[in-house]
Image (cartoon, rainbow over all chains, first blue to last red; front, side):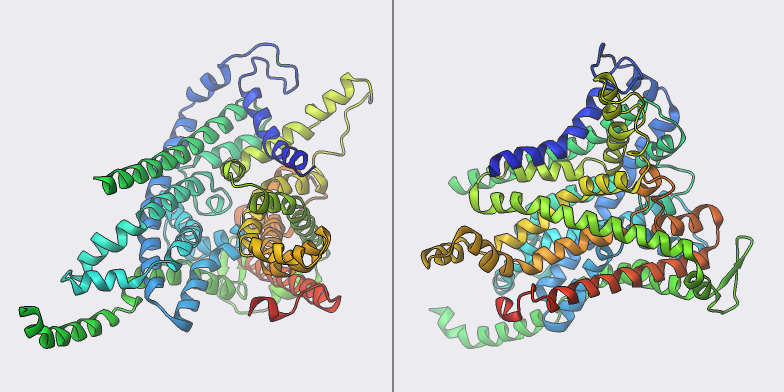
Amino acid sequence: MLRAYLCAYLFFLFAPIAMIVLFSFNDSPALTFPIEAYSLRWYETLLSKPDFVASLVNSLKVGIYTSIVTTILGTLAALALIRMKGRYRQFFEWLNFAPVGLPGLFLGISLVTLFGLIGLQRSLLTVTIGHVLFTLPFFVEAMRSRVNYFDPSLEEAARDLGATQFQAYRRVTIPILLPTIVGSAILTFSLSFDELIITVFVSGNDTTLPMFIWSMMRRTVDPSINAASVMALVLSILVMAAGGASLWFQRRWAVAARHE
Amino acid sequence: MSALVDSKSDEVDIAKRRVALALPSGFGLGLPPLAFLLLFFVLPVILLFLVSFLTARSFVIEYVWSTDNYTRIFASTSFWLATWVGLKNGFYTAFFSVVLSFPVAYYLVYRTKSNLILYLVLLSWFSSYLVRVYAWRTILGTNGVINSFLMSSGIIDEPLQVILFSPFASVLTLIHIMVPFSLLILVSALRDVKQDYLDAARDLGASKLAVLTKVILPMAYKGVVGSFMFTYILAAGDYITPQLLGGREGVTSGLLIANQFRSAGNWPLGSAMAFVMMATFVAVYFAFTLLLRILNLAPGRRYHE
């Protein structure tokens, strides 16, 4: 019975998404079953719109900037957490996690207030700042379980063997944490690529892909929204798959190196 | 041999290095993320709070301190109605997400070794938020899948108008969006309740139901409440889904606040609304956990010591 329930649960999760994928290939603009003919016309319509292509490029850019900044800040935070103890550690953990505990709306309006008061023009830079704030807690949280099991004596051993602090990071700590860092960086990209709630407030004239889809949804019932959604979906899945594959290869290389 | 001779000076050296190692106790490394969070999280929230005591006239913030915004909000029926809608959205979403996900979390932790389903759920978590809102609009809409199915099978003659653009549509979509999130939190909570405890309870003659209510639920209580709390706060504060699916009855305070910052342009009023909304959510949340404690549904501290 549990199995049957599980199937129903997965059906609830995936049926609506599968339906959008099917409709995106529907030749007719009607959103009803059965689908009589399949075509790529909605994709062609979309790709011929310069606004759409620009928003897609912007989203990729912001995703990459965000992953870089979040990875640097998040890794530093994780390295710091390894060393911190007691109250300071609790406070720092809390501070790193707190932004997720607030609705995105709250973060968005706080940021736009700050930008407004200091006179920072809204642009892809402000979007990136918003996304870093939104993704950092997830990054640190994903690192935390690994960090909790990290043995600081490994680093001390490296230092005792004559490594400088920087060398100890580069040759010991970072390689041990690397698979988690890569995984978390990919998570960051996916989160940023999909983020809308904060972006609505902090974006200027350059829209991102979710912003583009959102404004399409508010204006009309346009079947090319299906196609745009599917493209957003496929890109996220590709990024996740690339991340999974890189982790898998890393593990294989590590195993192969040990056997030599 | 020479190592033995030098051992004393080596020890001194190591001791020195230990001191050097102890010094960068993480604060140096933590400084950049700390600075980022102070500058772009703590400072903006403080500024937002300060701005909520200012006034605005025709899109321009005037630096006149007053509590007018708050008195205006407390007197506004439409704000409280919208907050009530948001609270209901949050409560229903959190309740159903946790209840629907719990059996799945149980299956994933105790009944299977495969991670496939967990990966599938993660995948659906990453499939865009908007795509899912749009999917439900397609399903529930006037010319949507449900209506055209019902009409073609002759059950109804006219499309049902009530399903789309109602609080029901918002909640259904929010559940769909939050379910993977609550599942992940529940899975990590159940992972802490080791199989051994379950086996021990069964050996001592506990029924399956007793294992669930006397062992699993009390021990995973924090995780279950955490899962509830996150989905509750996120769903109650959401404004995109109510805007796109909620219709006129589905306006939430989140949407009112978003409008103050987007179209109407009264930032101070919007900020004050945001703080009132957050305070209400937190107060309701605490009232809820207090109720659980009074009804004696919450376990004592002993399980977590």
